[in-house]
Each structure stands twice: as C-alpha cells, then as structure tokens.
Length: 227
Image (cartoon, rainbow, N blue to C red; front, side):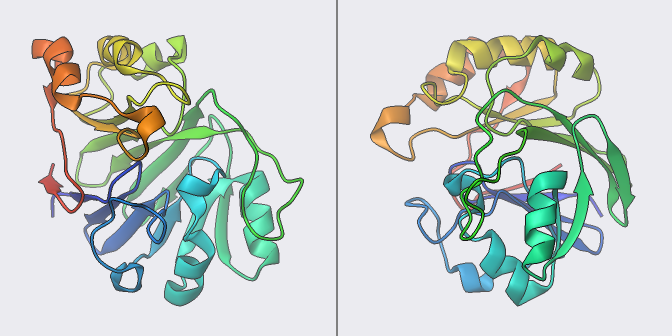
C-alpha cells in the first residue's frame, strides 16, 4: 500500500502507511484551517518535531484517546512518559525501526521550549523527521527550521518533502527554494504559512520560484496525496 498523506493545515499532516496511521505535529483544535473534528483523527504513532503549541496542542489528548506511541526527542518523550503515555524516544541523528518503516530525526534550527501543560521549564532540540517507508517511499518533514546546509545531506534521499515557507518564525520562500535545491525531492509540500497574518505567503509564487526543480503540491486542508 502506498502511503496516503492528508494535509490538515499549518504543519500538521497524517499518513496512512500499510497498517499504521501516523500523525505529525498534532495541531487541530485551535488550527483555524483544520477541517473536521479532532475526535475523528486516528493514530497509531504520533511524531513530534518540537514542542511549540502550534505543533503539540492536541498531542496529549490524541495520545490518551488512541493509545498511540509518541515518537519524539528524549526530553519530550520523557515528559510524555511521566504523563502515562506510550513513547519511543529518539534524538537528532538517531533512528529506529517501526512496523511502517525507519524513522530518523534530523537537525532543525528553531526554538526548543515545550508548550505542554505541566512541562514548564522543559526544553529540547527541535528536529526534522525523515521516514523511509517499508514500501520504498522516502518522506521528510522539516519541522520549523531555518535553512540549514545540513539539508544537503538529504540530497537524493527524499521523495516528498514538507517545508515551511512562512518566514518570520521559519525560513521563508526564498530560503525554501534553496532547501529544494539542497534536497532535490520529487515533490514539495509547502507548510507553516497563511495560518495567521504574520506568516501570510503566496504559495503559487513559491511554486513558480521552484520551477522545474520539483513538483510543488500546494495542499488545502483536507487534501490527500498518494505517494
């Protein structure tokens, strides 16, 4: 079964691969672009790039309801474990095998504060997520990040890349184009833009700048991509 990706707005995506349902950066309830109800979201695994509110707002509730295993950096996973949740800790540069494939956390450059109830004072390194699915597809979610020269290490290793383009808090469109040049993915999904006025961007203009370097898949909340 080919992975099926659903874009939920902002930086939240879910992926159905084989018999596993993945959710990356669960931000539903307060996401102004989310279509549907968080109660309808299913998850076997929840993957977390970092602890900012707009990436973890529904993490604990979703994990409690579904019993999903939370894949996150050691610090976030340790806190979640203290809350009675199922966890699988990893850290930057490290990977682990799961029923759906191999997950490696990659470098990202962003803030590390963890905005979860009871986690005051917790910090961690932000991460990107690289997944090599058992079916052969290779997926990268950059998380919130500036442009990194480390992205050149991913060249030729990514089929679908989810990259932030919002500027101000992450890299903007021009740096995201450079990231595409570094990574050389087949498909690029822009994220982390238009959620609020400070990060409004023209995704079509970004796609034009990318040109023939990759296929830019501009996704509206609820859109599905088979890859």
